[in-house]
Length: 374
Image (cartoon, rainbow, N blue to C red; front, side, top):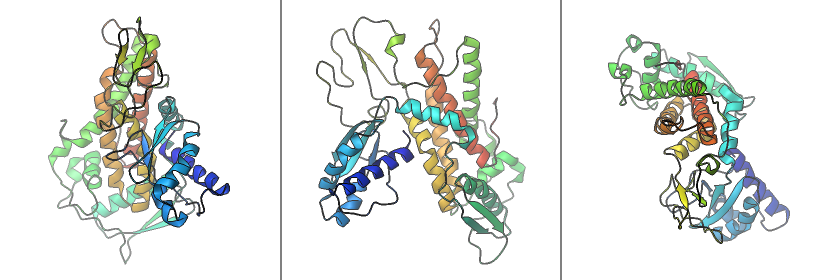
């Protein structure tokens, strides 16, 4: 379940509560769904109860208590917990990661596209300046991902004027020049230097393009080993590991990402996450898996915000986040030594390929090439 789908689930819960008379409010047009903040738990959190408390004439905690069971009953939702003044913290079911990966792979370069600006014409009036023209050119593509159409003109009054580059970026080459102009926020002065050409970890453009190349290399190497991707619930796969005792999984989207998350209450006869009993093998979540899943899930939101706020830098920065998570995760995709390819490896390969899809799509929107080899 993506954040967009979860937002719709929250709105449906509000609508059901209104229909039966438990809440007397107008159903909002949208519901914000974000990773939980400090003190939160689960995979996502929403402040919808706090937003509706005033119009409903009820404390936010009471509104949250009305909505909690309706959200918890939705397909793909494993649990809902109310924290703080009325935040609803939502834990997704085990198949959520597989559904997300399948969605990315199914839509390919169109993953994240939506209709937030459907039918709208966005007029971009820019000065005669290299950076402004590159930003406008990029926004034409980003706005199109949301169903809108951007028209670029040199006219007054100007409504798109990023801080100009201090010098001509052309000597950097087309890819590095565009990155140098697009990665900084519009109000920041771009840095035009040969650092953008360095093949080092300190260069974010290199990390993004290298991460994309690594996803392609992983696919080629997996084919050599005789297996292909197969989206499935991620984390450990007990069927692939011989053992005598039961298995305890750590949370792929909760504890691995947020140390402050409250541990789930164990079912009778089982252990709490992160603990073990005699004869039990605890299988940890692969490193950076949760971060990578979150980055993929948030990509559609990033595109909407970039189109709405005329901010292609948001796409560039999100690609860096995605690349860093992929580079931390890549080491567990292929089998080690004499290890046989398993369902876990096939699922991890699917996640890596989904990351490559997002990286390639984002780079394309920025007008930057995504190399197969680097």
